[in-house]
Image (cartoon, rainbow over the protein chains, first blue to last red):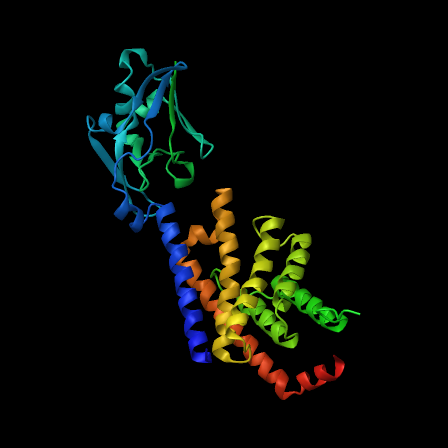
Length: 166
Length: 181
């Protein structure tokens, strides 16, 4: 094989490697390829909702259809964050009479080892925009514009548990 | 008696290049906020080492040795194992590329070998980031941009290596080496 062919082969190998890395990453992070091959919607299991340690329901894709979507534009990346009010999700399974302003609401992700501790007062206030949005991968994420929960680092991605403690 | 693959003099040279990589990593900083910009230094050194000791495995040994030194010095942002593997793979990648491309004094071959080596280092960091779940800096900045940076600076490093090798040849360094060997 002459030098030109060897150089051409090397260029092809580099292009293939770079393409493979970008393709894998696109799938992993829910990019264009992921969205092309895997249709949207809740791709993960339903998220259990607990009240005082007892499971009172599971929030699934079918349940989300009963709720109205809201959204806001996040200040860091100027992206629209859309989803369902956490308040509305909880009220699908819990009676509002049982919830006081001081009731604790915890939204957690075991896989990310993250959680957000909130009060029902915060959650019930619609202007706080405490929303369960959906990531590109079809996983729920807690987003908000409320002070103390208005940065991406404070949001909870891959939510797998919602807990209400009176 | 069976002849050793690398002579003592060659091992000394390779150790010197390995130390040079670590020193370059610590001392030389380009004011560029781009991923992989340090590759311009160390891929140049790896390419030069592969011609100064013209045996397959020379670049890998330089990578491994510099990786051990860097790991002990606490360089790198994802721990000692990541540092060791990423430095080593930069050498292994360049070595594998030079098996195909052969001539590190050719500008194209050297640049491509530099890209291979630097991409191998990138892949180690990327895989570690995936396994650990803690995104490396380049993932946060955008993987495609970071990968492009690694390819560009790997190629520049390789090209710089070829320039250095040609300068060394003109200065009679390889004739000197033949006498020393």
